Amino acid sequence: MRRSLAFVLTACMSFACSDDGSESKGTGGASGAGGASGSGGSATGGVSGSGGTAGAGAGGSSGTGGGTLGPTFRHGINGGHRNPAFGDDVQADLEAAAGCDSQRISLPEAHLDKWGYDIEVSDMQHYASVGMKDQVAFLTSPIRAHSTAPASAADWELVHYLPKNLYEPITLASGQVNPNNYWAKYVFDTVSQYKTWIKVWEIWNEPDWVSDYKVTSTWSTSPPLAKDLPRFNGSIYEYVRLLRVSSVAAKLADPDAKIATGGLGYPAFLGALLRYTDNPQDGSVDGEYPEKGGAYFDVLSTHYYPNFTPGSSDAGVQGFLDQHAKMQAELDQAKKSVVGFEVTESGASHVVVSGTPSGSEYARSYLVKVMASAQRAGVHGIDWFVLSDAALPGASTDAFAFMGLYEDLAAISAPAQAKRTETGVAYATLKKLLAGAKFDAQADAALALPADVGGVALSTASGKPGLVLWAKAQGTSESASASYSLVTSASWLSHAWDHALTGASEEHAPTSGEITLALTSSPLILVQK
Image (tube, rainbow, N blue to C red; front, top):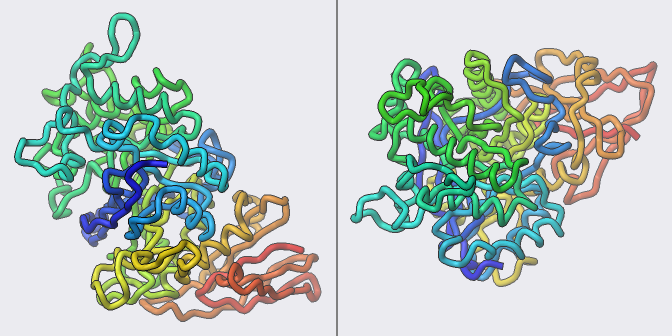
C-alpha cells in the first residue's frame, strides 16, 4: 500500500465543446496527496457512432468490447474521495461494492520518484484480489528536475508541463533506454514494474484541454500550439513526440504494452495528431521524423461528459455516440486502425444543479444507458467519474462535486458507513446482472426497436440472452413511456435499476410468442430464464 493514503478531490475545471460549438465541461479528478490512483479531468470526448459494431472503417473495433484489450466490457471507475484515512485498498473495496470491475489508475513520476517505483505493487495485488482487471493507467507529472515548468510554478502545476529532454535519443546504441531522455526512462521503469497488471498506458491527461473552445476552431487546418494547450504547454508536434517516446520505451519494457491517447476531447485535435509528425519545426515528414502521430498509439482514449448537452439522459447518450462518430471519422480519414477504444472519464450529477442536465434519475439512467450503448458501439470500457462526492448537497453548485457512486466519504470513520448514491446502486445492479456480458449483434438486430424505444442485446457471462430496454425521453424530462413487444418463446426476468439493493425481479411469460413490456425512461435489465 502506498505511504500517502489521503485522496483529495481537486477542483480543476475543464471546458470543451463539440464541433457545433455547444460547450461541454469536465473536472480535474481525484488526486492523492502525492498519490497514484485518481482521475484526471475531462473535455468532451466520447466513443463510437450509434449502432456501430465490428470494423467500422479503418479504425473499427469489435462490437463485443473485446479484442486484445480484454474479452469483456470494463465497468471502470476514476478513484477519488476526501477521507484521508482510507487508502487505495479500501478505495478498491468500495469500488467493487459499487459495481466496478476495473479502474483508471494514475502513476505519476512525481509519486513514484518520491516513494519508489514498487510502491503500488501491493495495491495492484489487492485490486486483482477483488476482481479488478483490464486497468488503464495514465502517466503524467514529471518531477521538477525533469519538467519544462518555470521555476515559479507550484508543485501541483507540474502536471501541466511537458517533460524536458524529449528530443534526446530514446535509446542508446546498446538498445537500452536512454536515461537522459527523462520521460523514456520513467515510462520504461513504470511499465517494467507494473506490466503484470497494466497493458494500456494513457499518455498524459487531456493534452487538448482549453479554457475557451473557440481556440480549437483552427485545428482542422492548423497545428495546435503550446499557447493553445495550458494542460500540456507544448505543441501538437511535441505531443506526437511524447507518444513516440512512450511507445518505444513502453514496448521495450513490455512488447504487449498498448499506448493510448490521453483522454482526448476534440476530434480536431485527433485530426492534427494524425496529420503531423514529431518534427519540432513544422510537423513535416523527413528522415528523422518519418511517421505521423498515428504510428505511435494503439488505443484511442477519450473523455465525454453530458453536462452541456441539453436534454434528457437519452440526449446525453446520443452526444456520447455522436462524439465518437466524429473521432472515428478522423481515424477513417487518416486510414488509422486502433486496437480499441477506451473512455476513461464520463459521469453525471445525481444532485440537481441549475443549468446542467442532472438529478438522481438522470444520472442513474445515463449510467446504465451509456454503458450498454457503449458496448454496442465497440467501446472496451468506461471509467465513471467519480467514486465519491466531493461535497454535501447544498454545499456546492459544481455538478462535478456530485457524480459519486457514494455520498461524500469525508466524515465517516469506517468503510461500512459509506452510503451508495442511486448511481452507485445502479452500477452495482449492472455488475450483478451483466458483469462479463458481451454485445450480441444478431440478437440486437432482431429487436427491431421502434423509434421511441432504446435498447441493447447482450449475452450474459452464463450464456443467457440479456437485454437493456427503455423508453426514450424527449426534451429535458426523464419522464417517458413506451410499449414494446418482445418476440420470444421463453420467459424472462426483468430488473429495475435498484435490483442490487432490493433483490426484486418480475417474471414475464410469453403469450402467443410475445411478451409485451411497459417501458419507462428508467432502463429495465432483462435476463432470459
